[in-house]
Image (cartoon, rainbow, N blue to C red):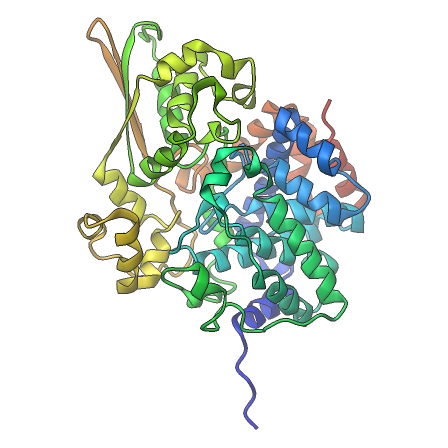
Length: 494
């Protein structure tokens, strides 16, 4: 009798469940350590915001006795301000860091085990997300990223066998969330965009541990997940280059709050603000932001819910005009800028009305050719990718993409080109411009060289202790007591 072929979740689970720190290159481990520090900063930031207070009132704090209850709270606190780190593909850290943090603390794991769980979860969540990237969801609306990251992060911490991983993944992916954009942007429901899938994943893990079974081919079956969640399914992305193509190497670290494409525009605004001949903001007549189609697309969606000071707090991190105006006025962009009294500042909204977005086709082309957010998916899709790209961008997609090229053998040189050029014009005829092709903290050579310093600054900027960030840099040597103490100290606010 011929053995049944191994399913995608089965192959992925067999590899990831056995992954240990010794199997992972040092450069990948270093990125994972920075990822933990960065997400701890994002969680701290969420705790200080009024929406974070609502979440805690509803579901309890981030350090509960039951890690299955802590995990979704940690996921939610670190997500909605867009301070969570991203990769090719997906917003990983809300699940792949948050869940291992909860279970490492409760299970008294050492630093090596925590790091191994984070990388294993990264690799699983990113691969499933990559397989569905050419579809209707991306970014935080792709809730399946958190489903997979939460299941695999928890089960790696537990040392569960590969069979249990496969069953839990199948259960979680059988009824995945389908995000409604109107609700995501129309109120405060976005606060639960990571909470809900992580909580679902906890139930899937409990059910699998109790012996509940699932369809092993849930991803690739003609009536399975990828058929429903991808316009152009890429099942090969789930297992391509296991142990060689480390998706963790595509990480982009968010150094300020803000959604797709805002980073570069704010970087440019701050560069202009620092110039010695900066003429102030009161006589600014126009701020032109040239950027990619992707940023334009996200900005259009957010603008439908832009109501000045009455804009929902969950929408503000997606508003390019508000972020750029705030950066020019304040010389920074921080968590405090997304709550009152900052959001009631009339000057910001007046200047935001003068911010105009314009697409730069060359920036769009660069975006489509960089690994993140979806350039590598287009390379893997080859000719198949034209279907999705035409639906997303229209007929000009052919001119911008040309030949997508071959998939890369590994991700050690990955980039994320979400560029912007900002030009400020004053009433007296003066102007100033700045351009940034890769945002500060995004995947690229600069981030690979100094990610530790970037995330350390991010952590201390939200009140974290330097000694905690420094200890995380040596996390692989930390024992269980030190890990538990670090996490408690890192997440104690006020």
